[in-house]
Amino acid sequence: MIIQVKNIKIAYNSQVVIESLSFDVNQGQKVAITGESGKGKSTLLHAIAGFTPFQSGDILLFDKPLNESNVGFIRQQLAWVPQETALHFDSIREMIDAPFEFAANAGLKPSENRIKEVFEGLSLPPELLDKTPSTISGGQRQRVLLASSLLLKKPLLITDEPTSALDETNRKKITDFILSQKELTVVASTHDSYWMEKSDKIITL
Amino acid sequence: MGEVADIGYWKLFAGYALLIIPIWVLWYYKTGLVKDGIISIARMTVQLLLVGIYLEFIFDLESNWINFGWVFLMTIIAAYTVVKRSGLKLKIMFAPVFIAGVVSIAITDAYFLGFVVKLDNMFEARYFIPITGMLLGNTLKTIIIALTFYFKQLDTESDLYKWYLANGATRAEALTRFKREALKIAFNPVIAATAIVGLISLPGMMTGQILGGSSPNVAIKYQIMLMITVFSSSIISVILTLWISDKYVFDGMDNLKKIFTK
Image (cartoon, rainbow over all chains, first blue to last red; front, top):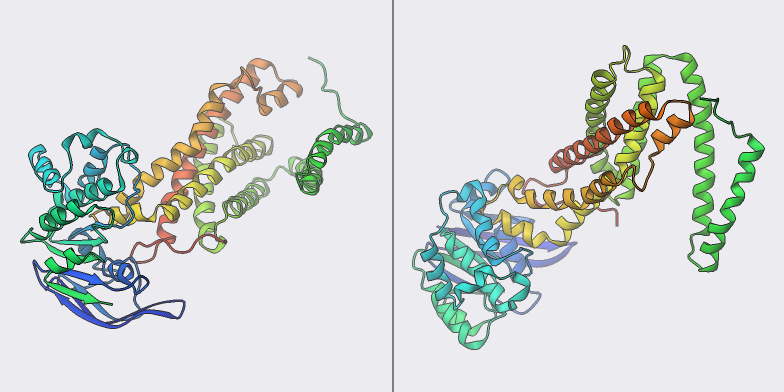
């Protein structure tokens, strides 16, 4: 089992955002988390990655409870794509390379061919690598982050509204490309009907 | 070289008349800074007068323990000022800033006074107290800039920090970029100011020594050593503060605690 969420409750300043939520995610499964704005989709993803505390219940990833002792190991199994795409880097190349500088990802650095392959799958021209993040569109930045996470080849991808900044054509193409990665387990918060349609499981908050 | 001309208390009092111009400018443009300006001048006057009295006293006593105690007290006040001015919570940040201050002062004082000047007693009041005072005073601003920028950046760019962590970085790896940016912001002005010493600015210590009767040659050597010591001490203090504070400002899941007072 990749993720087990058992009866969790998350509250901010006594306001309950998520209550009595349980679900499992198996290896290779594609899970869409949906619900109206403010229902806690992003909060849930942040809780799974250990960025938001939960008041009761348990979260297990890779059969290990999410706690202070295991959080380091768990995060090393993840690729994380936030909704916010304004991450400041001098170039797209630097943004792509950044995660491979960490000791946990040493030796995972992709070949130029692999980078081209993933860029092509996400409709990104290879020339983009030399540009600065501020000179490309929000949709392209979002896809660059997705490319970076796919290049990491981690078993679990957690992504917050992965297609929110994309146009209709790219939305479908990119959804197909990401969700066709057989070994990859994907947990995404989304409002995108096509993404939900292509997912194995939908959790509505 | 003649004796330095003393300033009589009445003359000193008359010197305050010069403040009429800046206070009028602050008042005329409704800056709201007149009261703060007057209070800061009054505080400076009282503090320096008291220090003058105290220094005369401890120079006469010449006790290593009292000298050491005085420097310890100055370091406490400096650490308190840094944390307060950076807008950070005293409870969390005082210890890291204070420990870093003590260590950096110990290293740079020992090197300057013990190794370079080769004093028989490096705790001798006329060297130990003013040199340490200048070190603390000159490093304060740099530490405040570095700390404020580091934690503001971690707060406003928390998505980047989380992106690093959740893509395999250890906490130290995720913080490297934030430390690099804080060092750049804090030390660019120090580097620029160091480069123009002697051309545009004549530093206070050198001026003081020349007024006190030292030859410019001796004053310059002390000034060069002081600039090197301030430079080193600032970097040591900043990086030690950041390293030590990393142990206090994150929870067990590596998330930044609420450390700003506002």
